[in-house]
Image (tube, rainbow, N blue to C red; front, side, top):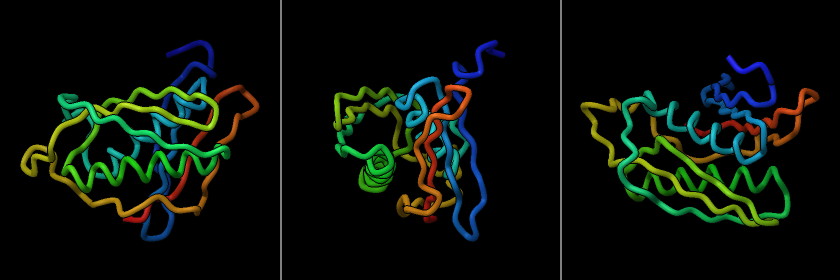
Length: 145
């Protein structure tokens, strides 16, 4: 367990009616975005069952951190739906208002992944990107499933 709370990268879910919230945290905003992406995968399946075999580049842009996060999650959902893929590993960089990311994953294998739900989109509900008092960054929203 890290001694520095700001260095811990984590993800989690939180309940919101019939939908589900995703939350990522990390020492940087980009790490929080990466962890929230892993939480998105975990809405569908156990992330450990997904192999990082194929890379998909994803780019979004917004001067607002909240909307940049929303765009990132919706871009992932779009790639999952149109490519029939699940993602396991994420690497992001930010340059000004632009977010450049690579998501690694594989096509859905129904037997191995046993998908629980299909995310339809990230919503404005509970949307928040902020730096906590301990220095950690938190990125969260509710995903329509």
